[in-house]
View 1: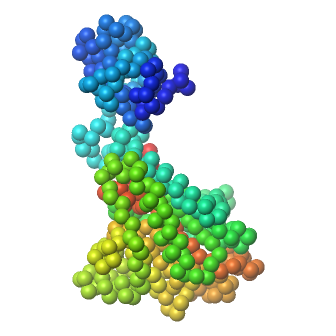
View 2: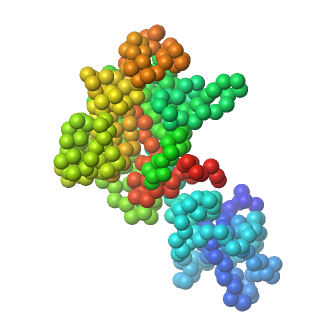
Length: 425
């Protein structure tokens, strides 16, 4: 039965069709009944005049959000959506929905985000919400295509590690038989393993985990990270590559339906401005915004993006050369600073990256400087046997999606968001 159906968007070009989807609405006017049927491609009016459809079809009373199969003929109609309606010869209720529906997905009644997330599988049926994940898929596929076209190799690595990747305390500990293990905070060590093994340019798409007890609109405990790493000793090459990648992405997605639905105008600058942390700190403080010793506050990031927009007509800004004291142990040093960067977009960090320290003794020394025990880091063995100079970065997919569409909360851009309180659905 289902294998015969066509997407609703294609039904308008046919005469005899079979479609399937959810009942968006059902009206019974005694001598005529109407169903608005919805699938992921659109909506279609099913019209049932009592005199023109079989009795077994007319007698059906599907509940809202039931999943049904419909077969019949398409005819012209000035009143129907899209100028056509379907007169059914057959209707099957494949899955009947309970009533009432726990949340409104029509957009007529505003529902609290927390409740929407409780009923996420229904919330996503809202066509506008559905568009978020269609665009997110396009973003991931486009970034992947860019890497493929630039001869990167996609890798898939374990999300279980023997020691926290980034150090610190923001990790999830799990039982691994008789050992302690941790959910990966990033695939950094695995990317370096691949480079050490002769895969000179790699990328990965996968979840990473941060046990950050934050309750903000921009943090998740589990998020999708797009990571790249390759052999290089040129810091500017990293920034140039990401700028080229994002320019490519914006060009490819500018005509996507989600861009229209969310009324977004995508503007990519002629050149993303680059500013060192020390200089950025002075600019932000001059704007009357407080900063932290080795980083910008969220308010500072917003202020710097305002500066970039005003001075360079750019929603993006590269923030570079952070103090080593406040960066991860594997960052490559340049004096007291590092050859590292963040990319800010519309006031929020979407990328962190930089060159990595490839010298075994220096890397070991930097671990000790951070209060870490080198003997607990198995990956350090890679650096004894000729690992090349390298660098890379990671893009947070949910943050990027949120900012492109102008969403109010990062949880809207996650199919099943995880924060300090949420572990379902």
